[in-house]
Image (tube, rainbow, N blue to C red; front, side, top):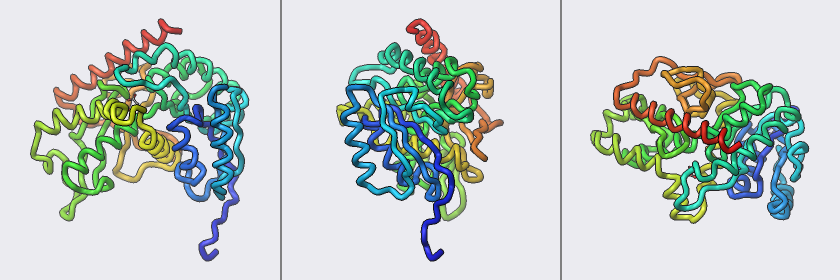
Length: 337
Ligand code: LMR
């Protein structure tokens, strides 16, 4: 074939809600370029916006056409949630009221959970039966939980939320601290909520060195930094970006969404895990019925929680604290509906 691209697979239909927003605008070209499903997988994009965002969405469609992506087999733009959800195989739920400077995720709760309840019904009725869902909009874990509860026929394993952004942030911090390439760092864990109570855990993380894999705790001799500044930097990174940009993170959020779906569908490399917000089955003593971020490996389109990791006393407290916040968010979400 001498390097010719042979694309004869059936296209996969991917929905992006809030597609003309900051994250959507960064994400759709990544999807169209094959960064989510690989260089041999054609895609059809369904892009949903509000009436207010629709004019901008028309511009995004024009740009997608102008970019002449070989893998992009169709683009549907709409303000109609039913049309948007029709036959989608993957749904990336970005739409939501974003957090502004000084706001906590709880502040955006009531507007966002109503959006998720409505979209859950449309997905349940119109998406493909095995549709995989990634919720990005905050409060991401609780929006995903609401979506799960109001779309009971979508298998619970298919509804996830984004904590890969925090996972990647943790990899980035370790790489900066040790002055190693980020791709040499692996197996950090984000436990719990995509919020400032999340627990970025390096106890099982390793770095590839010329002398083999070394534990991060062995290489970073500064325990104080690992147990304090590292954790708060990752926990507060979203807020720091909002302060600097006056807008929430977009390129890193889009890139993390791309990584999340890619690894879920294509699989995680042997010996490597990633963090995903998934429906708790009681692993690590986390109450079932929460969407909680765990370390997971993925194979053949299915994630599994990594089992048997040793949890020390300090970590236990942090795992429980972020679970408690999710229990409270769940109650608040129900009171808003
Ligand atoms: C982020 O983590 O950057 C986003 O979830 C935005 C936010 O509100 O923190």
